[in-house]
Length: 142
Image (cartoon, rainbow, N blue to C red; front, side):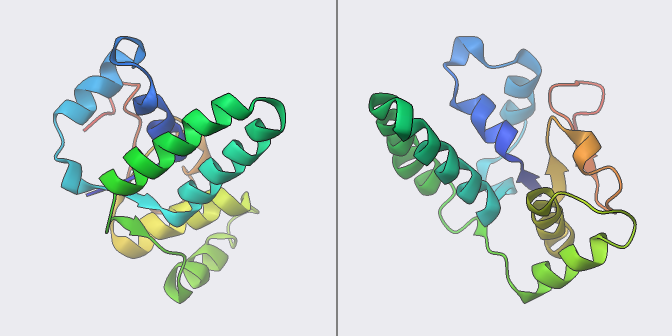
């Protein structure tokens, strides 16, 4: 079972011809039901939409449609909340070094739920006691 980072969701949003071939292959080998999102990823997407709206309302509308009609429906019942267990695990992850808040919450979500973190930015999570997969790097992609 896998927790997808925001950069992974953003990659698979691209037109099929523009998705990285390794990422495309990684997803082809997985059941959609094996993949989860953190509510923090939804937050990050929402913030992106709000920021884009200030400059380009049309593009913000495209992203809003993608979020509402693709992401939220595709991951219905597989968006994991930041609950007490995640909050406590995230705080505990700060023992080794100070980590960015959002990465810490996403990593703690993977930890608490026993999921493998799927991200392009493995360095953001490498100090966390969670398995990591970078689907852009076929040698590490499970």
